[in-house]
Length: 438
Image (tube, rainbow, N blue to C red; front, side, top):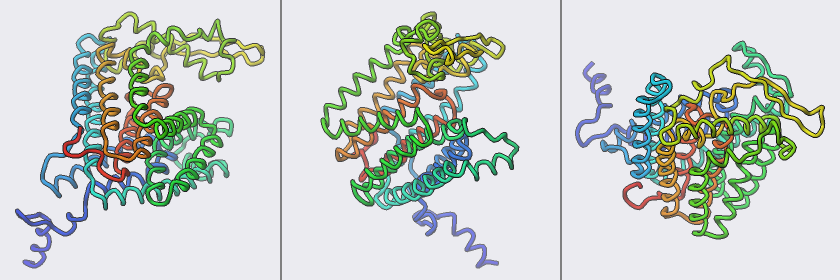
């Protein structure tokens, strides 16, 4: 019994001692596991990205605490901007159109944002063995996940169909394939950049280009329009950044400032899809609907420009039962599209407009400060030009998807961005910081 007790209590390290298990358990392990399972999880249960992210943050924090017994490192400027935004979001409950909704939504969003900042800080301070482990897991997970997605596309979702039948979900018809694959494709568009960088490190530049071509073909095959365009835009930024080097930072910075601050007025200038549909007749029906949503959101922003309607209140402005019929005409009468819509269904399908709508100019400036901190950190990072270019590409890909899809505070989507950002930092060849993270 004494021998057994000694074995059990040896797990609790005495001062200056460490159990062998804890010597190998590092924040790289949960992050590597996330890289290995992200794409299969996103295919079958995309909302599972939120609990995966939470589990990775908790496990990485525990590993860091056990190994170092010090507070986790955080990117200081980014964390300060996020804390300021969270504080303002909580304050907005005092003038919100739905105070209870605003107040209850702050805590989970704050936990995700700060958890992401901590995970990025841990990834930035990872040692080379940890980085190698994350790269290997990302390559393995990307290869397995890609093969799984390709198989599901080729065999009409045989595994996914069996899963949906088992849990009692209706099986979507082939014409709705894009609905099945869209969330996964959005995850893949972000995961692509740490994956390609890992392939370049482990194999060669040619292998990374080949993997990029395969991903591009997969997006086309899946008819995942938004992830495809976002990945292409990210790729254009990648090659431009490699070509012009430091000039890319002021270009992206200027575009970011103009895009965020002018967003409500840009939305007003967009064509009215009900009366000017011929000007944008090449767009899809869903794109027509988005134009209508953005114009409606812009009109609401004009009423409360400075502080917004209250955090997470976009869905409360037009509850169920407020649907109106919208008709979008084209040159071909047979292609006229008419349906009942809520003027703002759940969220504005544009993260910047949603921030303006809910928190006004003040919130937009705080989010701009957070995004600027990320861009500035990349500019200062001690990385080679290919790694920096991949970082800029990831940044733009995330913004592109967030500008046309999903709600800004959807847990699975916000978790996806933050988790992939940490993976991106972890696959860099070295820490992107010299001393304290910023």
